Image 1 (cartoon, protein in one colour):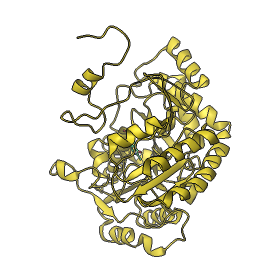
Image 2: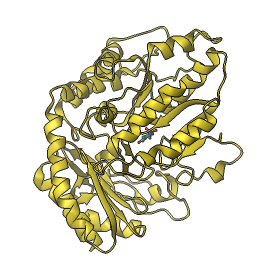
Image 3: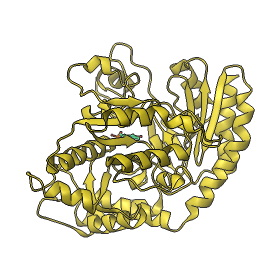
Image 4: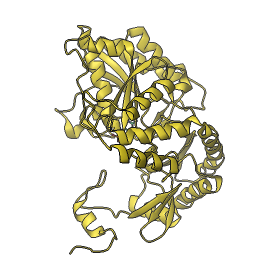
Length: 426
Ligand SMILES: *Cc1c(COP(=O)(O)O)cnc(C)c1O
């Protein structure tokens, strides 16, 4: 039976609509959201809950931000899309100018793409074409365990083998090299031995390695691990030593989340290729970008193909670019620095209070990211309900309960998030 009013047909949803990483056999209930404003999601039943996830790292300025909404509306009246092959437009040119200006200086060329995973595909393809053009084809990537780079095949091949179930796709998925992930936390003293395995892998295999790909400072969906900046510094030094490209996947960490505009800045390094996505449009639209140096770009284009071999249909979508420009303008005002600092300070005070609970293995934080790691995996449906009943939206995975709220969250709203975690784990 077709519903005639505007309520979400949850039965149809359960029977026909696939949500991320869900089963058709045993679909978990979903919460219908009808609108969102500031840090709040409004549920269909009228309840308003605080979004602790920023819709997966993206909604940094909060929902329905006047400047972002205005930018989208203004662009919609001009054109929502036009092909990017042989055509250019002001929103894309302005966006690329801004990205070149705010990212590390060597990054001078911008490839706009549709999602984070595609930005990673593009980065890996650039590295492969780079070595091909140099007459020295290489097909291996070196990364660290517990990483996450997306759900498409090449991205998945460099994502943690266990988390992304490489065994399911064995035979089809390319096999790459995984070094031990960094052990030392961001605020712990640096141990030089932390880089030993990575160095060893590179020593052994560098002749086959096209590039190293790594999430700078914070490993996101692969384990919410926050590591020491010196690890990243050493990775850069080793890549230089062996003449290997370094790809920084800043898709989760970019645009202020860790307290620096880009997490690479914690280590003072520049990558050869950098991927951004998630918060690029302030959570309004899907858009990503892969940036690289003139050396890499020109080497790629001087090769047999004579160009970089990629071009998505919706590349440089003007609507998405217009919103991204508005989001970067907000960041340029600089309030994010104080906001993220205040969030970090409050997390540093409240998370240790949660750490004392029996169920809790460890807590960690950096910038506007707070993580509670448990000894045992959570029971998803019930903890989700507990959170919603406490007025918050927090979506754990496995043993990890974590928050990365919009930067605009205030002290009382952030307390509500951490108190809800405390309550749920008690
Ligand atoms: C989310 C994420 C991706 C994938 O981005 P999608 O937009 O989901 O395809 C890649 N790398 C990192 C570090 C991410 O956090």
